[in-house]
Amino acid sequence: MDTSDYNTLGDAIAAVPEGGVLVISDDIIAEPFAITKRMTIDLNGHKITINNPAANVIAAEVMLMDTDYSDPSFFEGRGTSTGGIIEKTAGEAFVVVNNGKLIVDSGNIIATSTNALRAQNGGEIVVNNGYIKAKEMAILVTGFGSNLIINNGVFETEDNCVVSGNANASSAGTSIEINGGTFYAHRFSEGFLACGVYHPQGGHLVINGGQFYVYNGVGILVRGGEVTINDINLTTIGDISGKIDNSQIINSCYDVCVDMRTEYPVSDMVQVTINGGRFVADENIESTIVLTNDETADANRLIISGGTFSKS
Image (cartoon, rainbow, N blue to C red; front, side, top):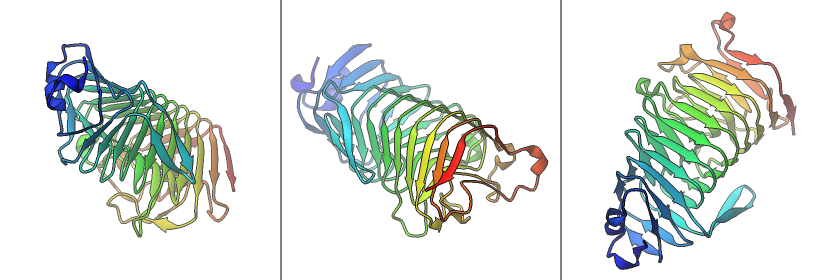
C-alpha cells in the first residue's frame, strides 16, 4: 500500500497490516508518529519533512528503506544526499524504545537541530546502509539493554560525536558493534572537540571495521566500559584542544584517548584493547594513543597487541 489514499502519514501507518509495507508516493510534510507493529517503510525516492520537535517513536520491528537510494557525495568531509529522505528540522528523528528495533536498510535520515537516532531503554538500531546526518549525534545509545549494530552506511555529525553513549549510571549495559561504514565528525562550537565514537558508559563497544575522519577532535574517547578495537581506519585532522560532552576536561586531537580524569560513575570499569587497525593523527599531536591519569596502572586499562600508528 502507499500513502496516496490517506490524508496524513499517521493515517497511512495505522492502516498498514502487521508485517506490511508502506510506500511513500509523494513528498509530504508530516507530524511525528509512533509505530507499535512490525512493518517496512519504503521512502521510494521521496522526502518526508517533520517540523514538530517530538520524536518519531519506534516500539516494534521497523525497517526503513529507499528503492531510489544511492550513496551521498562528499566534498571536504561534508555530504550531499540523494534519494529518499526523512528530514527532521526540530528534535530527534527517531527514538527506539522498549525492545523496539529500527533496521535502516537504505535511505537518508537528516536531523538539522539535534541527534538523528537514539536507542533508549532496551531499544535496538541496526544500520545496513544509508546516510545518517545530524547537527549533534548521528546515533546515541543510552539506557540499560540498548543496542546498536552498524554494518555499513555513511554517518556525519556537524557539531558533536558521530556515535555516542551517555555518562549516566543508568546507561550501563549497552552494546555497540561497528563492523563497517564511513564516519565524518565535525565541530564548530567554540571550546569543544568533535568525536568519532564517544563511550562514557558501562557497556561494551566492539569495532571490527570502518573508515573514520575526525576533523578537530578525538577519534575514539573512552571514559567507561569495555572497548575492543579489532580493525579500523581512523584519521584525526587538526591539533586543537577542547572539551567533549559536559566534562570540563581538556583533550587534544588524539586517535584514541582513554580518559580516567573525569571520574564518571563507571570509570573504574574501563578496559580498552587494540588488536589491530590503522591510526593516523596530526603531526603536531604528541601521541596518537593516550591513557590519562591512570592511578591504577596495574589494572591494564589499555592493552595494545596490534595496529599501525603514524602522524600525517
